[in-house]
Image (cartoon, rainbow, N blue to C red; front, top):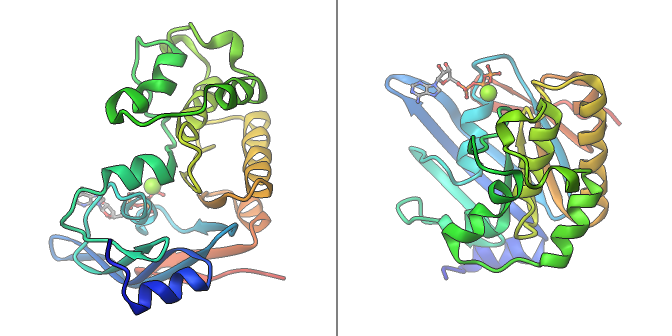
Amino acid sequence: MILNMDGFNHLMSNQLLRVDHLVKRYGTKTILNQLNLTLLVNDYASIIGKSGSGKSTLAHILGLMDDYDEGSIYFQGRLLDPKKDNAIIRAQSIGFIFQSYNLIPHLSAEKNILLPAVFSNLCYDKERMKRLYEHLGIQHLLNTDVSVLSGGEKQRVAICRSLLFDPPLILADEPTGNLDAENEALIFRLFKELREEGKTILVITHNQERAKEADKCYELKGGNLHDQTID
Ligand SMILES: Nc1ncnc2c1ncn2[C@@H]1O[C@H](COP(=O)(O)OP(=O)(O)OP(=O)(O)O)[C@@H](O)[C@H]1O
Ligand SMILES: [Mg+2]
């Protein structure tokens, strides 16, 4: 573990995730340009921005699913090595929620939810998962092939999967982009509950009203984040 003085300062100041001077290019196009972001433990933050502004690019980098050209990422005070496979941190500490669910078709809901444990050999709390199934209202769907579920049901299954290892950070990239108002309300209510439990939430959304419900709201524009928070 690399924990230098800077990393120590991050820990002491309760920083969960910090990104310094992040640069991401695709060919000659600079998508993220010296971007800085700090998420403190138990923050609830949102990001808005025009289509193509780089929101998903940023989300994938923060979710340790994509590489970047320059900059540093600290997670829980640790400076991450971009050349190293950070699969364990990704699996254990970051719950990622996609707009299009990313479920495996023709597998049951429960198999989809538990699949990360099969791949990683990590343990999870079975009792906690049972409570989560009930809370998300998916206990009657566990043996159902996810291909036949509605959008809202699929997203609840996907959210359940993202919470399997009780991660401190939830990253959601337009989690309600394909859903109706009722499911949208349900999912944003869940984010608030998770936040009350002590989780840190970062949600990307096109919905300005939802974005403003967060404590911190940023707009991604010109490759950097601009504070849109209104007290
Ligand atoms: N793998 C890739 N190769 C080349 N260019 C890419 C790649 N992925 C994204 N881009 C480009 O990067 C820019 C940002 O894309 P990104 O998907 O991050 O935008 P976004 O803000 O999430 O948009 P939306 O709101 O439509 O989801 C776009 O111009 C896109 O074409
Ligand atoms: Mg996107």
